[in-house]
Length: 421
Length: 95
Image 1 (tube, rainbow over the protein chains, first blue to last red):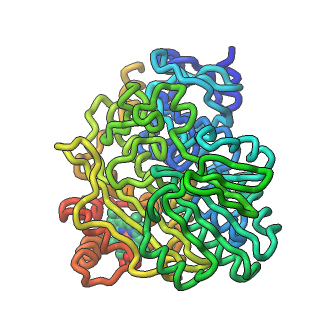
Image 2 (spheres, rainbow over the protein chains, first blue to last red):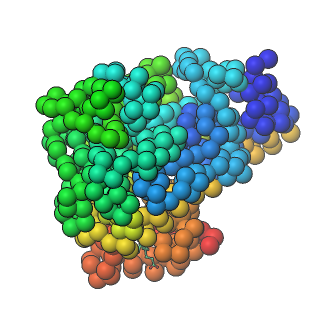
């Protein structure tokens, strides 16, 4: 039976194929099973908090990667200011909380039968499902992107991993006097300040290692989408003559032979091409019918994170149709997960969950040591049926500083531990 | 036997005030650590701090009496009642 294969993979002791069987088994000690698809900030945090808040719930986390790699701080790897192993974590901490970690890929969801189909582990039944799929890229919106990427001529490095390592290598190999060409997709995309952070820290690397090299930023948006004032001040103070920024410049094609990014308005050549494609909810969300809006994002009930399209399925993180003034960030995904965990515990106990107020913070490095920050607090609004920024709260750093840089590292260490340890 | 086993599965529901404190405080964990047990020194651990101390700090962040890099902007997002619920919950956590 395929179920048994899965349970072997997950390292569980006894096999049981349904809630009824679990409850009937002498050894069964769970009242319900929650399956979590995706072990990023959202999924990992949901799995951990479900176990923390109700240890009678069996939690199975399905994640295809054997190690967690953090997108936050991965720009520092690109700039050579930290190493890949510093932004990686194992899933063992979750196992210590009793989460069953299945190193497998969810290939389909059957919400009517309450089953997740795994690539290797067979079918997995659930009582509630959490889907935290992150984003996938709309490569087809940029002509010839995929062949150019496969040939290593263009990279996105917008999911930390092999492309982070490859792009770092390309930056190291680039000639002094070369152009690092970045292209930013139209908002919303994962991590609004991320591209500007990347431009900043790569410029800091160039300043020391290749003083004649340039960073050219082509932004599909009319202006910097996050912390604009702080980024502009940093660029003026620190990287005059290194960073050039062009707004309203949307990439529509790649010519790998001439290393050219074709925009709607002009064609631009570079030595290293880092084109970040437009994004939407991860592919499994599409397969499961969770996408509700602009053919990209998943609308949810912000009191529970339950999908507005598929009952019994909670969607977290970057894949959601963001609420007003809500960025697609690690902090948000982590706190979406806590809304979902609290709600699922209540629902499985037959109670009605109360809305939960959450907060966001994104730190961005503007040099090796200095960072800037944006924060916001989001509360349920009964009239508009969504989470809204609390008036008078939130804001950005007074100025870039090494103190914020220190806090950025501490935030990272705490959110990694909060998700995975 | 069956009745006993079933009873054991029912977690004791926690009081509404505690639940509100727990759920609000969970957001703070991204900086202050799970249940307020920070893994770094500069993000102050909140677990086990006296309730009144937490309430006072939050009020001082809100009013601007205590200078801060971030907490003034966060504290302004919470009512007095919410602050008290969080403070009570953090105070009850083991260090």
